[in-house]
Every structure is written in structure tokens, then in C-alpha cells.
Amino acid sequence: MKPALAKFRLVAHLLHGMWIVAVHFPRMSDAAKLEANRTWSIKMLRLAGIRLVVHHDDERIDHGALVVGNHISWLDIYVVNAWRPTPFVSKAEVRRWPVVGWLAEQLGTIFIHREKRRDAHRTMHEIVERLSSGGLVCLFPEGTTSDGLELLPFHANLFQAAVSAQCPVQPICLLYEDSEGRQSTAPAYIGDVTLGQSLDAVLRGGKFTAHLYVGAPIAPMADRRALSAKAREAVAAGLRELQGSLSASAVHTFTALDLDDGALARIPGELDGR
Image 1 (cartoon, one colour):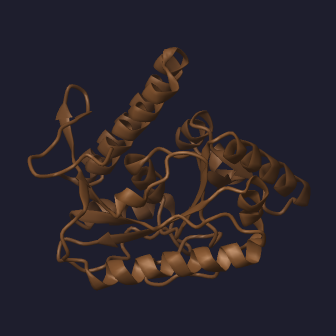
Image 2 (tube, helix red, strand yellow):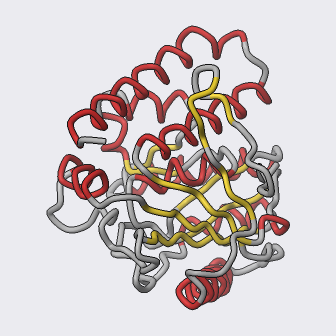
Image 3 (tube, helix red, strand yellow):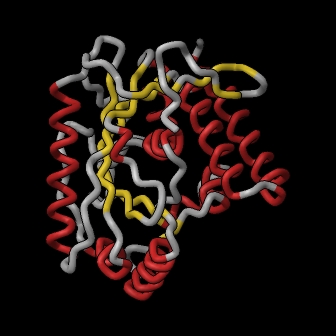
């Protein structure tokens, strides 16, 4: 597919997402909203030429956990939501992004002004409330994106939410593979690269596979720095496993097809990860 046509279809899909959220979400159950989010995210990845493979999905926690992982690209959000829809903690600037910012807000994203200490306290309180009530929250403790080849240091501050809520931490790890079976940095949204340039790199780079590694849950701890260090070790272990076995068979594969306006089809021999 030509990049211009692919961009048009992605924009159309984003607008369709806005319509779903604005018109249908008010009348939908929480479970239906999650499934709609998941199905929409799967199709978003397909339109971007990305196949999703999830490793060790049996470790997944569906309630009351802080999900933490490495951060490579704007695609990461859709990868996680195609696996299991989860509200994110995001920098406040995202709220001002056209279409994407509005959608993120409607889907429960917690926005934070990192430079404002008082806002950090508000954010912490909101995360603790959600976790304590059995909800999920995902954050990227590196605090920025990287090329994905190695992990950056983790910031421990927001791990206090898991300490205060006494909930488990679910480590995950993301890695993008190109059509030749090599780890790719093309999807990385880093440095001075604009969102448009990053999108072009993805659409011109051919087919990609997004690998999502699900680590064993980390039990509640009393110290946020120790918890952050343990979580980073788990994410690093996931990265080493993915880098060492790019050609290994997938645990679960999601495939989005144009059936009944983006419905999900099951491929023989593969699982849908539920």
C-alpha cells in the first residue's frame, strides 16, 4: 500500500474511533468499551502494517496492577491496547494533540505535568485510587522513548502508587521486528524526529512484528526504589529473551481483518489471547 493511501486510512480510522467513543461509548458497558478499544487498536496496527505477537500471556493480570515497560514509539499505546486495553499515564502535551489527545482523554489516560510538583501529587493520588479499586494503570518509567535496543534508567517516583495501593506490578517489554527477522529501530519516536517523520518511517519500512513480552507479576513491596529496580530487572530479562529469540514461535498472535467493519477473525492454529 502506498504511504499516502495508508496515511489516509489511518486518519479515517482515528476519526472513526472518535465517532465510536462520542456516539456509542455512553451506552456501552465497561466490558463492551474494553472490547471495542481492543478491536479498534488491533485494526490500527494492521493499517500500520504491524502484526502483534504476545509472549507469556498466561502471566497477565487483568485487575488491580501497575503495568510498567519500556517505551519506544507512539505505536506502543496501540500495541498494549490490542493486547489488553489499559489506561496510561502520559505527558500533558499529548492532551493537545489533534484527535489522538481527545481519544486518549476519553479512554481514561492520566495526564501529568512532570515539571509541577503539585500535579505529581495529584497524579499519584489518582493512580492509587484506580489501583485500589481494582483498576489497571500503565506507565513507562524510563520517562521518554528510546530506540529499544537497551533500557534506559527507570524513574522510581510513580512506583510509590503501587506501594501505597499495595498492588502487584506487571512488567512488560516491547520490541519491533522487521520483515527480515531483525530488531528494528524504525518505529522509534526519539530525538528530533517528528510524529509525521516517525509515521513515514513505519509506513515505508515494510511489514513489522510488534513483540510484547509479559513478565511474571511482582508482589507488593514497601520501598518504591527497590520495586523500581526489580521491575527494571524483569523488563530487561524480557528484552534479552526477545532479542535472543526473534525467530521463535509466538505464544499468541492477533490478526485484524476487514470483516464486518474491523471485526476480529481467528486464524486456524492461533489464539486470540483472551
